[in-house]
Image (cartoon, rainbow, N blue to C red; front, side, top):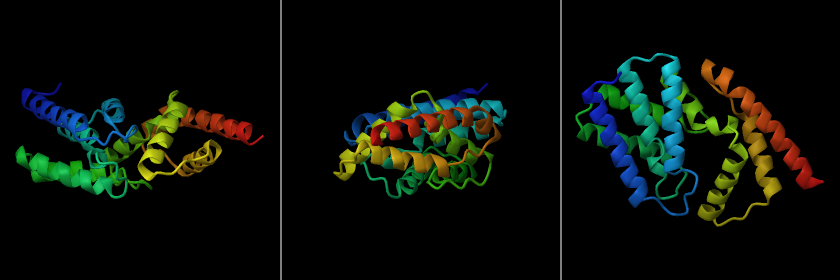
Length: 205
């Protein structure tokens, strides 16, 4: 159970994140938005709970979940993890969070950069949470939203089959990192990959 001081910090982070998404988000960003962030916060809570993380580590993981895509607000994908980590560092320092914890949060945010190369359990957890959608029953809907965002931000139209082939390649190269995700997410991801491959064949027939 989080104590009141922890609750206060998390509430402040949540409030700030929601405010930024409400006031500063590029309207063409339709995937890396508050809904995506809420999903990641939920998943890091579930996976962190499975591992029974110490309270401080779970809090830092949750903070990283809230802030991991803050660097995407203006719709610039390149180096958005670095921008998010830098923002988190300044925000947490202004809240008098200890430097070692700031480093942990920043490391978790930076670890979500694809190709993912997490170095510890917390980084594994947030990486798996960030790509949870590959395993979910909303996968196809989510990949179409991601396609729309990409088209809007890059002023480039994708043929559906071409986009799905790229998604297929990404899924084949991707690996979940935590044992939890390998057990709970991987089966759904493999089922979604089969669905995607069938959809590609249908479109190319």
